[in-house]
Length: 229
Image (cartoon, rainbow, N blue to C red; front, side, top):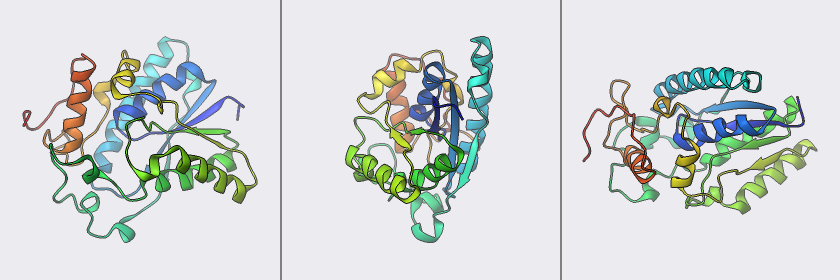
């Protein structure tokens, strides 16, 4: 692949969706990668993601950038045998609006996201992979030291030089949302307790999503099952 090819780890969420859209403007080729771990909301998240990518491709065609967006790569990294009865697997007792941010911590989440995707990049000749981690992420596997460490370990194992990049790492949520203006954010997905294919409106991630649109002064296009709580 081109030396200016960038792999982007993408979920259904706002940050990674905006990162992907912005990367299309900056790189010759962009490969979206979705890591499927078996979390309770993933099937709905994947459906939203496919719609987002279709809408993004339409925008790319209009802007003359359609050749830059590669097809979605899906990698399986099942975690149920490790997480056991964790709420992210069972869908029970998910953190709701008002619970501490630490309550939504998924143990080793960035280890899961990067371990297999970094190997994929090495084997496919992709020189760099990006995540949508923000300045405000408080978790131990989201520090610059962690990202540098896993980059170096996998490079050592593969005798390669794939780079882990954090293009949004110095930004706060409002700035990221502003970067996403004009992108089809109505097709993004943030919920950890979806109901009939809709955002529940009650979980902590739905609360963060509402706050993100409000904080950026942007209309929220999301359909919530429950009104604001």
